[in-house]
Length: 118
Image 1 (spheres, one colour):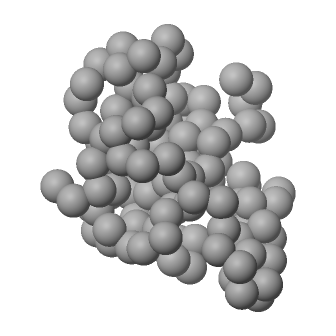
Image 2 (image 1 turned 120 degrees about the horizontal axis):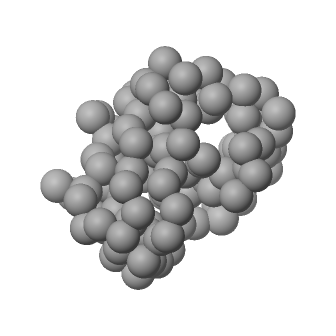
């Protein structure tokens, strides 16, 4: 995955969402964001593991991206990624009154959400 790319998961409600890396073959950083796009916490995820990486509080968005190396670097990467377009896309969805694209149901996507109520 290129350094300036990522995967944004948009959930219909705020919850303590978790991610895992069962069938993912590359390391990723994950950032959990609240409904306003503020970073709640970040974590580094190891490929091909079932370790749960969970939001430290109620999160609406989860961003997976190439490894950032540290929490402060991951937070800076998230802010940069959002400023390049993700934040604008989320704002457009909110203003439109439509539901944003939804993340797959918990536990369905390999390397994706594993639980939203831990």
